[in-house]
Amino acid sequence: MLDLSRRALLLWAASLFALCALIGIAGINAWPPVSTFDELGREAAAVTAEHRWLLDFWHVVEVVTEWYFAVGVALLVAAGLFRAYLRAAVYVLGVVVVTLLVRRGLVLLVDRDRPEWQLTSWLHESPAYPSGHATGIAVLAGVIAVVVTMFVRRRGIRRLAYTGLVLLVVLVSADRVFLGRHYPSDVLGGIAFAAGFVFLGMALYTPLPASQAVGRRPLVDSVRGNRRIAVVLNPIKVESVDQFKTMVTTMAKESGWKTPTWHLTTVDDPGRGMARAAQEEGADLVLVCGGDGTVREVCSALAGTGIAIGIVPGGTGNLLARNLSIPLYIRAAIDVALTGQDQAIDLVEVTGDNLEDTNFLVMAGMGFDAAIMSGVNEDIKKRIGWMAYVLSAFKSLMFPAMRLEISIDGGEFTKHRARTVVVGNVGYLQANMPLLPAAALDDGLVDVVLLYPQRFWSWLPLAIRVLSKRPRTDDLVNRMTGASVVIRTNHDQPRQLDGDTISEGRELRMKCLPGRLLVRVPR
Image (cartoon, rainbow, N blue to C red; front, side):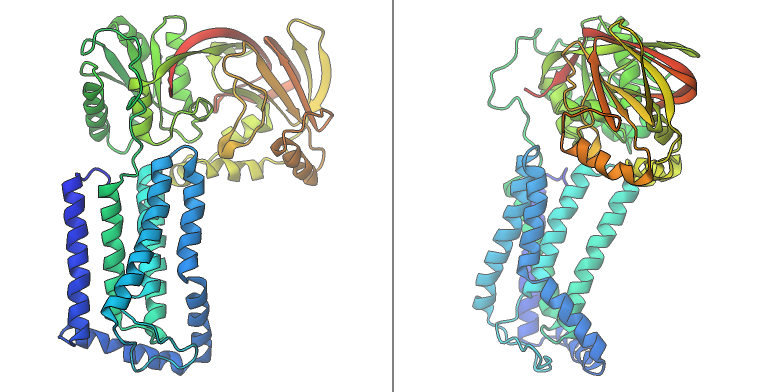
């Protein structure tokens, strides 16, 4: 739907408006088979009249789903999109409001009477065609379906969302018929009318974000059309590798790049070998699509080379992309990679027992934090995404406390107790949770936080402390900052780097390497 041309969108809109008009004309003039279909409303209202509980239920549905429900939900969705996706926010709220306003004028123009079998409780006497409730809920479901199509990558979750939206429309439509408020054709006409505006809105004002390069002065760059780009792709992170290749290739050529070369990760090589191959090809830009683990492997291989890295977030957490303000909408992220500006960010060098020398970009953790990662059920993760980490967190809430020692910048070791210790190069987790609010990707420092809720209910004040960004430190929440950090524990603990579980161990040594990477960020 989002890939349709403007002409195709206008054709769809015109067809749906024509269908709405045809249904209305047939219904008002009692033309079969619409007249026969409308008679089903008489039987439905009779069923409701025989059961008081059913009448009460439909009344509740009627009151809850008035026009203010559609406008209110659209306003909430638009508010959530406004900061990062202005066009989508305007589309959602604008289409809903305009549809309801135009429908108000249309219903007065058509002036169709209500059914004679309308139940007398809360009798409605305003014109009936098209149904206001059906129009409002259908246009709301339509714009939310567009948003889901844009931002939800997991097919199973999209299907679940679509199913829920369809069921909501069916519920409200049934309410109109079972209360006798409308003929069934009023409801169908309202749905067609609303769907027409969903398509018309996309044709006149696309919710897709415009290229960030539009209206801005071009950046200093190599000769247009001669810039080389390589793509490192984790194939399991996209629904269709071929569709992704077509999208990137088309956008790259439009932005003045050569046809991309492609390198797909494997189980044995999650990205390092592909990144080195891209470097050997002489790539000016390496675009990497995958989760934080894939991004870490590619960035580690390209550290210090001066090759810019464009990040297309395709994982569950995507913490690096979130902290760099890279859009999660895949087309917008590709646009940033192709037309954005370069920013030097820090890389953190990691060593430890039972661990080969490596790096991380986002966060390293020991204890509860790492136990969450290791406890995630991969099948559940594939179905519900990052919520799988929430389920794992609940199972691990009372992970045993650790005795540990910490040295900052080569200083003396200090002793602590904690359920988890996190060392971060970035500050924010999913849902914009400020675990390390002072952390920055380009300050040459890493930030450390120790969390020690002694009892189950201690997690509540801890969460309040974290969310409110209170600077006070104590045994519950303790913070430290430095260019290098050494953590030692009294026995083996689970450990993780950028969300990937590594071998258990007793020690992590971390050193920040300032400005080691060039990444593409929004202008």
